[in-house]
Image 1: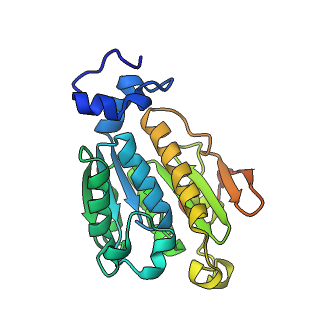
Image 2: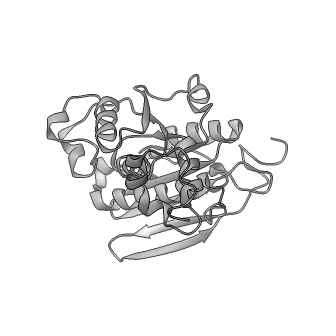
Image 3: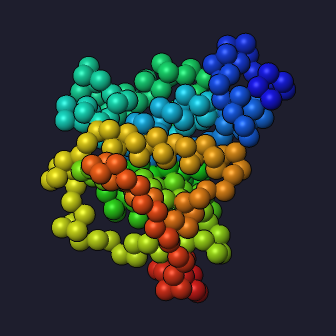
Length: 258
């Protein structure tokens, strides 16, 4: 499987992706699926940096990148798409440049904007998969609702302090959506940001790497084990915990009558 059916991959691509093609269940057919895929990543911060880098490195052919902020010096302990010379630059521009340097075969479309109710569904449309790598609940709610209504699979990751969380929301009558887990926006004091309690950069990177793994599996047509589970990571204790998620009949997004 590793050396057969290499299709129209160039010699440079064959060498670049040779370790992918050796993987059981991937081969050059799987690599071709990754090359044909369109993935949108919301957020080029700590989680999104790792996810974007590994998606580009794996050979995902088309990446959309949403981020409306500029690079700040305090970002650099976790947002590894950006360097010291990028401070003050737009994150979308800096990230696109870094991804092009890593893999010129990967096309990157940037959305240098903040997602709002009047633009989120238009941005999500046309992508095979969306990764929510943002750092706030309002954006997370917008993205999760748009993905559910547009029938686009979503992989959502979050990280604060020493902790991270990961889940997949795959539109379907039997599957729970993101709002089945978090029905309403939590109050600010219940979801402290990294500006209040800090964040370990490597924890954000861990969640971005795990997010990329789930995305690449879904793009191969595999089922995600996180469709009905939440994966919680405690970096300080070095522990993962898996929590069951259930579809709620009274869910404001996917419940009965919706």
